[in-house]
Length: 567
Image (cartoon, rainbow, N blue to C red; front, side, top):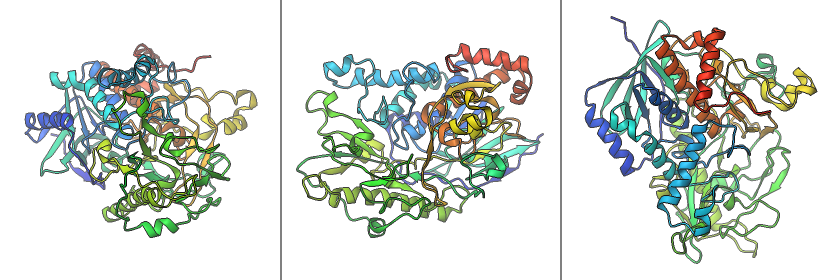
């Protein structure tokens, strides 16, 4: 019998949760069906974000039995529990992401057309954008993403091929001879634990929670220029220097009404807070100006919750607007719905990774108070174009995010633990300027070719202010490939990364961390699991054998995954 020793580590989750009937029922069904303390499946996926869901769907399509655990009660990760509308590239409607991701987006649009009283014009719009937010071609309510993901998974739940465990967080793992043999998950609200057994274990958590629990080698924060030779890397690496995280918030505007919240207990601190950064921030954090990510010059923003233009300045209200009331029949919505995920509520005074539970709780609380302080400032002190101050008609909409406090269920995570991978993606592979320096200017228009490409993606390299005092680091990247080697730890044999925990650096994480790329990573990992189990191989064997790799790449292409950018 194999020896099973559970390794413990720090994994702390969201504090505020709310029950959503259709998810809690599915979870309860699984809970009742599996009262035994041990579950067995082909693959165990820890983390129900976009990477975890895509991995599960891919594996299930190919006949595997899957256990999917998620520490909140919502699937969807950054798209739902964190409240962030999709950040995508300009070609997303036609290419540059798996067919399954574009089908998921189509299902969201169909959900609105099938269930909501849209105007005739909106219903006829092929590329319906329910919120018309300027950040994305598809801004929508987080709850709709949850419903669509569950709809996609429902056939496998009904057949018993999928066991879905919501409100379970991973607390321990057992490892034998560089292989994970089991993980232990605990219900967040009940005294109930389950041991999950599988052939393969996929870490799709937001913070790379399985890595310390399994003893998998990983890195955090910034690498030094000596380590990576990256153009924008610092001279001295700092593992604790990590990108800001954000507690997003949902709101609407009821003109003529007063919905001013109680003054947050940390409001005076945040109202007067001036970030200490290099290069310098533009002034106070709670202000309608910020450091432009590209130039770092002070830049004026606008705010008007009626949606009206604010001269030449970006109206923050319209930026992440998830419901435009004018897309729906009169009376459906009393006002637009918008998400607060802006430079002013990025939290960078501490980290959530590899810190003791009291420190985690302290920073999570402070991040929540920052967002509530910004909201209160908008209600009471934000300058208006008519010379007045504040918008008291702003209303917290916790129901939109499934919470009582108005904030998201889980912090929006930009940077995770990252595996020490078989292959690490560097700035010279995908950064436009760095690529030109190492490959010559003639090659600067194309990212590096990866022989083991299993997907493609694009986003500019976008690093938010960090806990180490770095201001924005934001510059051009190139449409890139996603290499198989970035999913594979250098030592562990049956643990795969499927979120922001893949083999990137602090720099390249800035373009591999967005919604469609995470889905692409998860789907490739799910297909890899199916391929190696069916053929009795290991993931490392597939990458190291050109014939096997070619066969696997043909397999993923048949599944609707592009491995090369057109042209």
